[in-house]
Amino acid sequence: MDERNEKLIKGKERIAQAGHSRKGPAPAAGKLRLPPGQHEVKNWPVLDLGIQPDIPLDKWSLNIEGLVENPKLLTWQDFLALPQVERTADFHCVTTWSRFDNHWQGVAFEAICDLVKPKPEAKFVLFTGFDGYSTNLPLDLAREDAMIVHHWEGQPLEREHGGPVRVVVSKVYAWKGAKWVKDIIFLGEDNPGFWEVRGYSNTADPWTDDRFS
Ligand SMILES: Nc1nc2c(c(=O)[nH]1)N[C@H]1C(S)=C(S)[C@@H](COP(=O)(O)O)O[C@H]1N2
Ligand SMILES: [Mo]
Image (cartoon, rainbow, N blue to C red; front, top):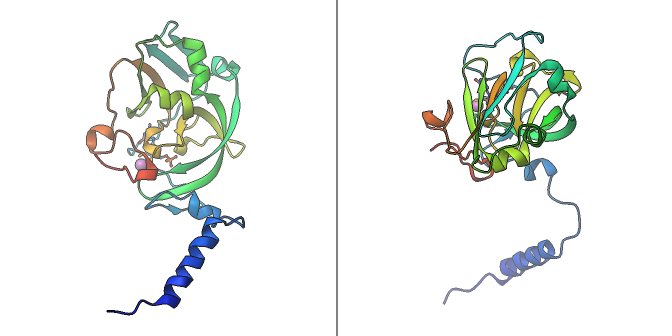
């Protein structure tokens, strides 16, 4: 019979016990926050379809329609008059980079719901961009996590990142956040967006490496 390496086993037992009752510092925060297959970047890469629409604020509007009690076409002034929030969140791109601790200012998706009052049949949301992009979310996830942002790190959101206004949804890959957002449409049935019909996952969960369908 092979001799067990008792010394090795004891060593591993000790590690397990130490880990179990561990009260010391957690493993490096950066590691815990990085979803599988991602690496951290300090810059902020730009991804688009080759078009970066230029929308002056006096021409800008946000159309909110579909299964809602009060459809709205918001001007810039209307939009800024909505309750404003600040949030700090990570940003995970399917092309394997993540950017931590982005400071966003804007309007919570929930505030949009308070304004337009989704009907009970509304279960999904489709966002479109001024460049013709689109992406979809379950309504529950949008209510929980989506934000319509106009400032990043205290500065007006740059055009290349979707300014004047884009969507961010930190719990899913970044393609679920429409830059240059133009329409928010409440739907009873899911309507896959630009990348979702091109082989990207509809659920897009970074924590389960859920990139492609
Ligand atoms: N309108 C619009 N929104 C978009 C895109 C786009 O091409 N057009 N690209 C998506 C993709 S694939 C990603 S990864 C993020 C990139 O955002 P960033 O360029 O600010 O990093 O925007 C998403 N939102
Ligand atoms: Mo992307």
